[in-house]
Length: 353
Ligand SMILES: O=C(O)CCC(=O)C(=O)O
Image 1 (cartoon, rainbow, N blue to C red):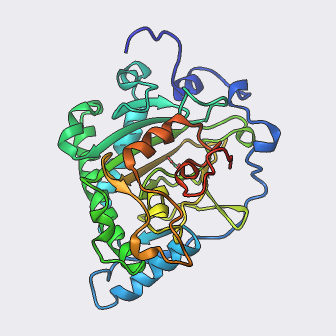
Image 2: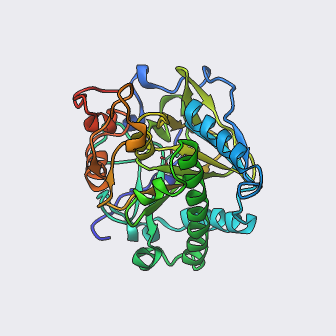
Image 3: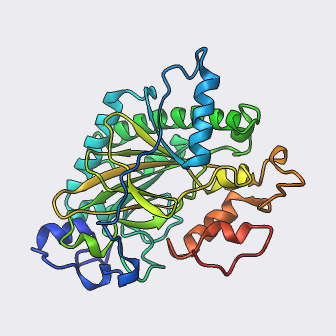
């Protein structure tokens, strides 16, 4: 990238200056601050996938269905992704964020339609308050269409990230089948609605923050995905909204956090909800999280599954293409509006969350 002379990325701002106070453009208005003292201790279900293809499959599918319905979030263990694949991904991501800023700026863009881009905050073209985060966002399925855009520094980046993407995709596909069954649909029903399928990944880096009670790594938001498969390092930061209270989802080694995204909410005709979640920061440690967003291809038509539409439960959403949704998602400010309101059969397009 050319023409950038001042520090763009947050990590470099933090590491090059002794920042004792939050720069003003990161400070949230009083009513929108995280209120870190008021966070509940709850947990999301932890589901063992070891026997997913064994005799107790229907039992595991039921557990997954209950977690999707009651929480919109769950954790999985014995998920089949090798520990070495996870460790390599985390190490590569850490090494990436330690590179000099000028190296990371080679992929910098504030254009959300770019399929590979490094950036800071969330959507700098739209937001009025910045978020305490740097990121690298990669499209990763079909891999051969995108891998040539990915960073080549660190030298292991493409190999480790590609290996991780393949594993995360298989896990996502297994879970999508289980979720389809849990809704009483054919095992492959949801997968068939996704067109050629798509997958993106974000590498989120949250530096230590001098005043974590005034800002967010990411404010409360819902995901654009069908489901999200989240890998986080050992530093807490993820919080999920349940019954009007935020609670912390602390890291459990070798597990993934799975959450329902907007596309699943639509396909399930609101039986499974995309849930607000946020990333808070702390003053001591940097934190890394790596969400994989499993998504439809842009041409896929998404709408409530006809089998889940009845006289008592009419279609909550109209049909739309994922491309149409994606454009809307990036045209609004994160946490200010609920993108799905624009696709409801009853017109809620002017409401705010
Ligand atoms: O950092 C986290 O734990 C959450 C990340 C997230 O919600 C996102 O990238 O959309």
